[in-house]
Length: 304
Image 1 (cartoon, one colour):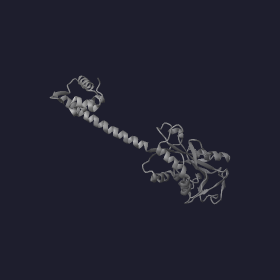
Image 2 (cartoon, one colour):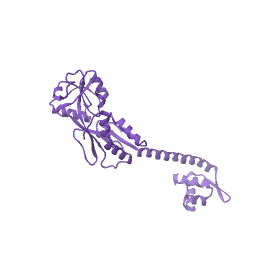
Image 3 (spheres, helix red, strand yellow):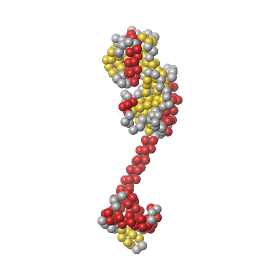
Image 4 (cartoon, one colour):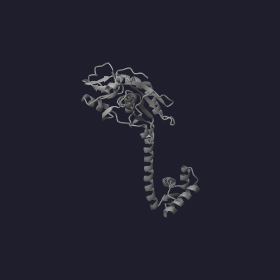
């Protein structure tokens, strides 16, 4: 017989009650079965663990040593079980969100959600491609952008937003009501990194206008893009709503007349994995409130 957790549990209870019959009853096993386990444990260890004392049994000095270690083992196991339960509870209340778009307004949006659901936690993943996070243990919701609306059984379009051109207010075209993208064929562009969905969308619109943008700097931070535009280094594409903070302070945002440039922000989830209740709560909150929240932040009216 190997030294097992079950055998130690039987030993611990027998040492506590000092009576085989009482211990067997407390453990919900037969007295012969308990006696056999204790005997096999003693044979495994090569020492006697109990000795008779009247109608009871008491620990030998070897039994006292084993009980001290057994108590520590059982205590550690109890603490481990509690930690595992706490970790599982935390995981059950955590919503993992992969963000490919609208990262500027998500913190404030989730803060609003937390006011109504303070018990729900978030894990945020920001990657350039959805394929990069397939190894992740669980992603509940994906927030992404595309050139066309994506509405399926497991995704929904949250809003449609125009893509503007951001340029220094000293640019001769900055005061125009709108511009044609082809007029910027020779311009220096500050863009997002290759592979980012918005970069793919804007490259497509440049191709529609008949040119490839002359990129002098790549960044994934709208604030950084804004500062370089302000410094006069070039122009950039700027989603009207979710990049609302880019304009102003010597940076002009000008609508693009041709081609008409826009993108769609959508929310999706895994069609093969049921959402947890907290993830379902957040999904419904996105669907109900994201467009209104984005419009309020940007001070505009968007469409879906």
